[in-house]
Amino acid sequence: MSRIFKPISDIRKEKRRAKILTRTRIVVAVVLCILLFYVLVSYSGHWLVRDDSFEHVNWVVVLDGQSGDLERSDYAAKLVREGKADSVLILGRRVFRDKNNADFYAEDMEEVGGVDPSRIYIYRHDDPSTIEEAVSVIPWFKRRAPKDTVLLLTAAPATRRAAFLFNTLSGGHPAFITVDLHDWRYNAKTWIFEREARKNWLREWAAILNAKWDLLGVDTLLVSDRPVRFPERWENAVSSKTNVTPPPLSQLVSIKKAIASQDSTVKEIQTEAQQESMPLPDSL
Image 1 (tube, rainbow, N blue to C red):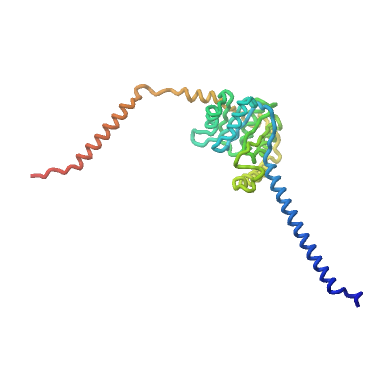
Image 2 (image 1 turned 90 degrees about the vertical axis):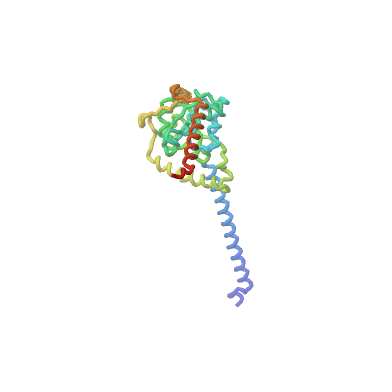
């Protein structure tokens, strides 16, 4: 009988071994999933950022959308001062009826950054997205500097998408590169632990998929595909604003006369109020 039936102790040992083996497999699978998740998350965060190296570029393009710290403008001004860039093209959207971000950026770059206004170009637009900015600017670059290398300044997680859009539409002429400005809003190493960085990560992955969809079947953008709009030189814009016709002298009033007229108006109002508050005399 011992040859037909195994001892109960052996059966229990086999069940115990099977449980241990099953639990070991589960633990190994969980550990592998965690490692795979970490690798994918870490890689996906770094993949969004394209940081190209360069020695010198002829053009720096400051895309709109920077924070109030103007980190892109400061970086562009630094490159010009160090002789690593020749000219800066600033793109800006209209924020009020007659106010544009490009004017604010250019004025700050001249006054705070110390950049010669003859090196600054501004491009005022109402383009709602990066691809529209590319479609607007590329024809001008293809006509002016088709063999140059152009540096695009945008948010860190948007660098790969911006380079993809501009280089696809330009056909590599000119060639567009990007850099990581190390903005506090996105760190490729620790993005998963910061709320704003997680929002930027999710937004950029959705934007990349949308950009891939938009460029399906789209080839190089030729100069003749769209009317070429020429950016304006900032020094010309400043000179046109300063050459304002002054008002005629007959309309100018000195400060003393203005204060005196206000004082006399106030006195008249006070006198009228006192007269209205005085009681009427009794009729006899």
